[in-house]
Length: 109
Image 1: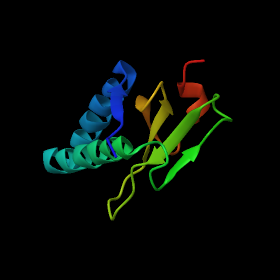
Image 2 (image 1 turned 90 degrees about the horizontal axis):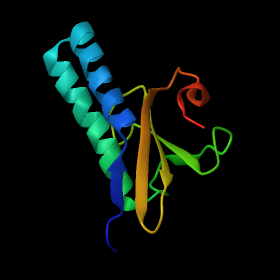
Image 3 (image 1 turned 90 degrees about the vertical axis):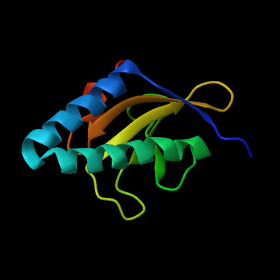
Image 4 (image 1 turned 135 degrees about the vertical axis):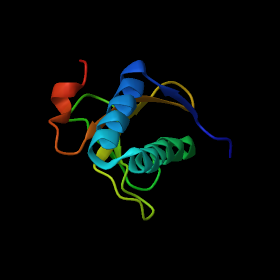
């Protein structure tokens, strides 16, 4: 079966840049690069579709919103990929948010 198309919103791209910068300041360049890879792999996993293992529905945040924790397949992390299905076989990655955040506060209505 063909992969799903992924569109990464500017807000999600900014989130990744901020996460990477913070990780670099706190833990160094090598860890920042490793964690950026973890974030990237989580986003890439969505090319399998919205029902990829570990993804969950979060209609409490907004209708159609789903999340995937980046800590998967032996990788560690503290962020969620926040996404929704958009059209036929397309996923919009909306944000990359820390799992301690109030997710609803960081999503546009």
